[in-house]
Length: 181
Image 1 (cartoon, rainbow, N blue to C red):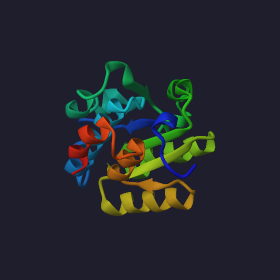
Image 2 (cartoon, one colour; image 1 turned 90 degrees about the vertical axis):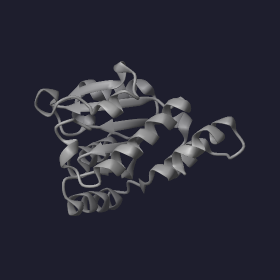
Image 3 (cartoon, one colour; image 1 turned 180 degrees about the vertical axis):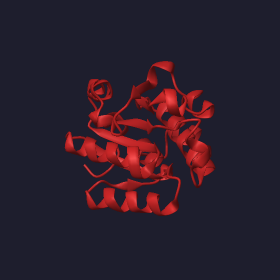
Image 4 (cartoon, one colour; image 1 turned 30 degrees about the vertical axis):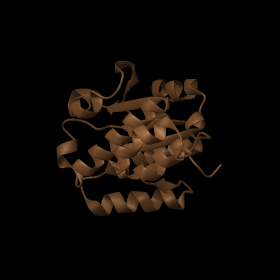
């Protein structure tokens, strides 16, 4: 399957920490797009999971993202890849959805390793380019190239929302259209 299908997918927001986010290039764009993805996922009943890597050191998820999610969406991890963290892997498997839409920070570390690990585990991951960031633009660009080379589609926030919507004549379309305009 080449398209993202809402009934087959889940949204995974990776490591958007209060101590990490300020160092990211294009931070505001990434946070705004992560917010759009969360709002769309919640409206369209796409399951949402948020990982926190080493919360004690990096702090919790940034408040503007955490406020959009139910408390039970947050998963703690110590592995860079969510796929390698047993508790995270179990939470994702319990969703029984084969497609993972991945966004977050840092693109070249936890986001990329999660995408590669999920592909190895049999999922169909999609990485949302404009909803990920790294400290340096070249790290982000290299991560996107590497996931592409691994056969993982790199998509945008708008592509994801419109693929989840699938049609333009629904009440959901009219509600979510302002998010991507």
